[in-house]
Length: 33
Image (cartoon, rainbow, N blue to C red; front, side):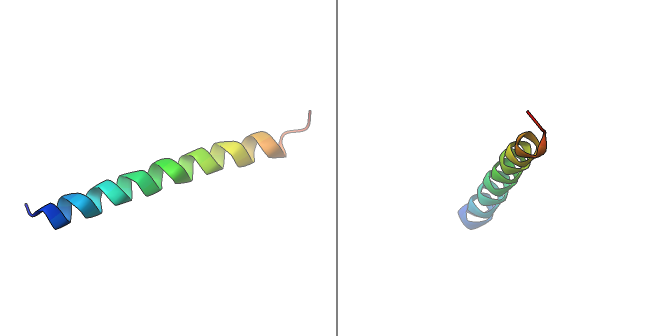
């Protein structure tokens, strides 16, 4: 496995983590109170 592939996988993992964090924030914002 090349370093480039590892780098891409790391970026994908970071994107997914960011995406789920944003989704949690949106869920919290949509809830009344």
